[in-house]
Length: 310
Image (cartoon, rainbow, N blue to C red; front, side, top):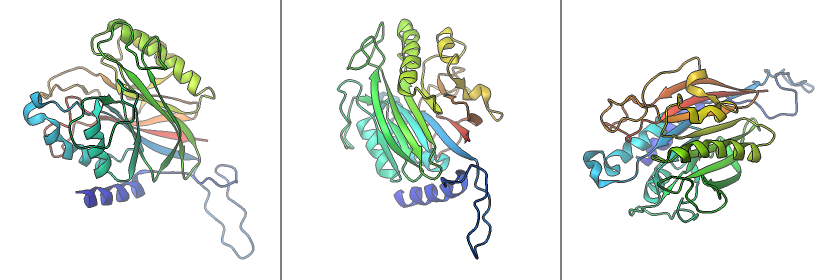
C-alpha cells in the first residue's frame, strides 16, 4: 500500500502542479543567456495549489461498517489521487493521524490536541482527543511558522467558548512554496455543532486572528467544518475579508458535504475560503466519488485549486 501511494503521489505531483521559477529575473521575463548558451523559455508567472478540507470523523464503533477501520484505506487512496499541497483535517484523533502519516510518507503535519494543547502521540491505538491537523506535501512546500488558538474568549489557552459543547481550535501555518518562493497562510478549524453563539463569535474571532497573523495580507486559505451553510448570517464578517471557493471558482458544484452515511442530506457544512489580491479560485469539487469504500466519512471532503500570480 505504501509503495503504491508513494508512486501515485510522485506521478501526480509531476503532472498536477504548475510552479514558477524563483530566479532573480522579473516574473515572466527571459533571462539573458551567457556566451554560448541557448535562450531560456520565460518562467511561469503563477503557481497552482490544490487544497483539501476533510472531516475524517472520529473513530466510533457505533458507525458499524462505516467505522474508521473500514474507511482508513479509502482515506489514503483519496490523498494519493487528489494530491493536496495542503490539507486541513477535522476531528482527527492521534491514531488516525498516525495511520495517514505512515501511509502518506511524503506528507508532514502539524497540530495540537484541543483538550491538552499537546502534540498528539504517534500511536495506532485508539486515542480520544481530537486535533485540527494540517497535512502538507513536503516536496512542494515548507512550513515556516505555525500556531494554534482556541475559539473562545481566551484564545491563547485551552478553553471552551461561549455556549459551545466542546473545546474548539484553529490550527494555522505559514508556508513557502519551494519552487516559486511564494508565501501563503493556511488556517484550519471546526466550529461547534450546537452552540449558535459560539459559531457566530468564532467567525468574528477567526477574522481578527487571521488579520493579526497575516497583516501583510499574503494569500491565505481557511478550511473547516463550519456546521453551517454559507447562507447563514454568521458568515457576514468572514465574507468581508475572504471569498468562498465554491461560489467563485468557474468550475464548481452545488453538492451537499454532510452525508450522514446516507448520501441524502442537503447540508453544505464544509467550506474552503481564500483571499489575497493575486489569488484566484480555479476549481472546486465535493469529493463524493469512488475511493474504494462507500463513504470516506460522514462528511465528504472538499477540494479546490487556486492560482497565485505575480
